[in-house]
Image (cartoon, rainbow, N blue to C red; front, top):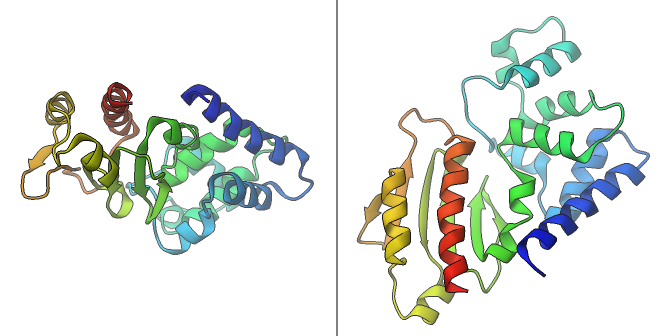
Length: 220
């Protein structure tokens, strides 16, 4: 199965379970994400994990404001991630997989579409205090700290055994350095931290994933 088809299978599973459920949308989404992605959004929220930022997007703020009038922006930012997501999901009168995934990404910083493609990319990802994706044959590890403020990229044990080295491919090292990562020679890893102490933006995550995916494809 190729990368695209693996992604499509998981997203289709999620979409079908959401459509077939007669339960409230938040309960359905919580259960479906647990089953399909082995990820508990409420448990992640309870641990205080998720995207860290001064303010959610306008769409999220408006969705919560409609459910909890009157409420200030500061009060919204003090709600748990799960409370915020529930308010957003309750806007969905007709559940739609794509819009639900957009809400989850906007609130938690979890891109389920991207997660669905990780297995075939041979990339392990530790984020939100859990292994979002991890397979024995994975070659590269992306290890994010609390709130995805910082991240380490390093070779997996499988890579080290297969390639006979603890160093990432030279082309990947150069690509990571160009993105602003620092080479931590003592651990053979590359490190990046957001200077504003907020979660790294989705665009940066995307560029990081792109250069690592290109590297793993050449190694496969």
